[in-house]
Image (tube, rainbow over all chains, first blue to last red; front, side):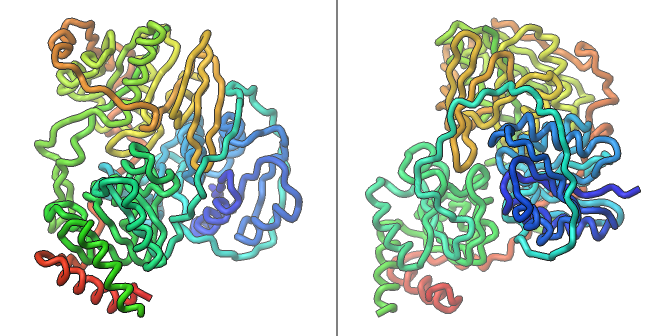
Length: 319
Length: 261
């Protein structure tokens, strides 16, 4: 029996990441690694997946499957993985991927772990890590069903090429009827900041009294060559900062070298997004704020005093 | 129009303490609360009632504490509550929870919309909406931050990270909502007293025709090997008192770390 590992993401770079991780698993289980690709794609586009180790690309070249047409994605994954198809199904945990993962799992009557942040083989079992209890803990879980659906958080694994000579299998499925009608697809307003890969990050929270004070924070950002991030309130409630800069469990998860948290109390929903930072600096006037518990360095004080002084001191040293 | 809002009680995450030596989470004594996004789901249902005269049923699976907790949802505006309380549900995985909810929905009968939060407060696995829609074989719209209804057609704005997708679907369907969709109201005090007079249906698994052996911890398709706080190796150098001195120390420390280029 060869269980097989299949990966799926609606974005190519997501598939590359999953292939990088899937390679290890397929080697370990001595099984085939394949990638599902849906929609129009030329030979060149498909060969890219071989570069990341896909031994087989299963291509459903249906051009009528639109972006976010989850019914079609779920249908394809189910048809390919049911019965003797691949047992390990890795899906990138974008919002679309997370929805697809739960639905495919239900159709397969399979166990599913979403938002995985790590996968470690333990004997014959695969242990999958995810945050639990609101981010307070990491739960290590084994999926007991034969079919295992795992959605992996973006950027947990860095995509690395490992070229193989793969083959292409074209499939022809009947597209399920569209129950969800698309009216409009809008790009979000904002400058689409890529704070996940920022080297340095400055995060602000509710300690900031007004939107105008962002000027001060931005000055610190430019001195530190840092991207600006924020807690949920500043973006979702106050709309001071665009959503693509929101950090935390429902926002971005960042891995900066330096993270400076300003006026952030440190609720777990936010700190999950900065936990992987190498150095965490916290500035908060409340000595008891939980952010200090995860900080390497902290200053207890009014941010309106501390931040200008920081700016001043860093400037003085730069000169 | 009949709207079912699914809600889940989880322990108050702000009350969790981590044991320093074992990194275990101490959950004893922490109160149970409905998740924030579950409250968004209920709020949206109540708004449908106010706007379209919909009937709102709140549905929850949980422990004996649910009997008190559910009054909050009734006070906020649900017309009726259905709660599933059965010791056999203890330790249910998402597959079992979704099955239990689906059977409860079938018992409730005719409905137009099922609302759920995009994820629960504690585990945020986001599978319930997906699994419910599959079991009931009805359409699903996830991550909805804005919606309107007209003649049995729901128009919804989905938040798909870099893009917003506007879609149209005929009822019945399952909708998962994000916290942007509304600001949940609190239960007015006067309503809390009245809430206990609203219909409250308490069901066991037997009432739903579910074999207790098929749900709960023994039937779980997921085995939790460990659940511990991540190891923290932070320096924890906190500077207080004089701001000048504190900032001086901080900037020096960051320079030594090579964090200031």
